[in-house]
Length: 343
Image (tube, rainbow, N blue to C red):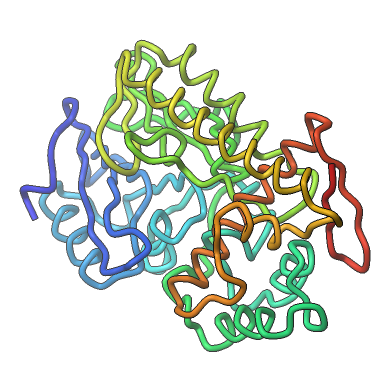
């Protein structure tokens, strides 16, 4: 355990957690103990996977740092399974949880779902062109995956939380943290900045060597446009900060600019491919049709991993199509709840 815990600033710890999941295996958790943990509240940024081994590791680290569940506050950056998988468990043991309520806009999306909300799933599937009549086999694969819990690792159990908003301050361990809006990867993702230290917990907004998924399945949210604006702000407003993401290693200086450029260029390249798919189609395309053509996927997934991949690239293609529409390169029509796209 100890080799995964390091003090990155005085009284600020980084813990690397690993979960037994194929989708993603590693996440960084940040912990700021109170000056006197028995009397002062402590802070944890995200809680990791819904996994027994992860829970045991967190318990050991909390004991090492003198932190009890009842004196712990948890800042959830966004509602994905690797960031809030243990949130319900911590809440049951008395921890207080903070999250942007905009993360509750949708109950079924690219990287999380709740099995109680089948209505959301049906709406999303129709939006992207997966319907019971038009694509019956694909419709059955997605609905059965939720009903039989085949994608259980992405299911998030309910937890109570206190709402937070941009600019809100949090005081722990002698530090003053400010909530920063990081829209794009999700609609309501937030990070925490400590301006005196020039430190930013940047969640999944900017990751070294990875292009974060901007996955939307709901119209008119302009998520990719918001993501580009957020990356521009990160590269300017936080140019002299140390950025500690939830995955991989810290970024600072020139590495921030390089990571931003790499992500933007990767998205622009994919946007151009998707635009060409729509432009050269003889008929309007649904999102899932455009996604399969842009990524070269077969019509029907053969494994659970391929089904998950189709789910992710469909959501990413949706964001790219919405961006193209925002920039007047394509237009969108809707028929019986299905969205169609053409140049």
